[in-house]
Length: 97
Image (cartoon, rainbow, N blue to C red; front, side, top):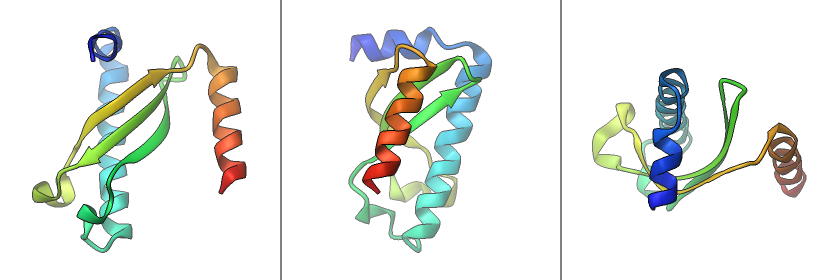
């Protein structure tokens, strides 16, 4: 996790704030979609674009005990090399669904 910690530490304050906000919003969406039974989710993996500068693939696990204002714990984190790679990954995942 050293590489992941270095990546998180390299984010600007604005990017960190956006990551935190996105995590909270993702939790709320998952909480609503599972009708409060968030423990049915094992992991949630999302592609994130922070300030249109940093492009990440993040896997979270959420703590149900926190309720609707919960946040997640990052269990996997990788950075796309550029916006093009990020957009290609997003497009590929959309085609799988």
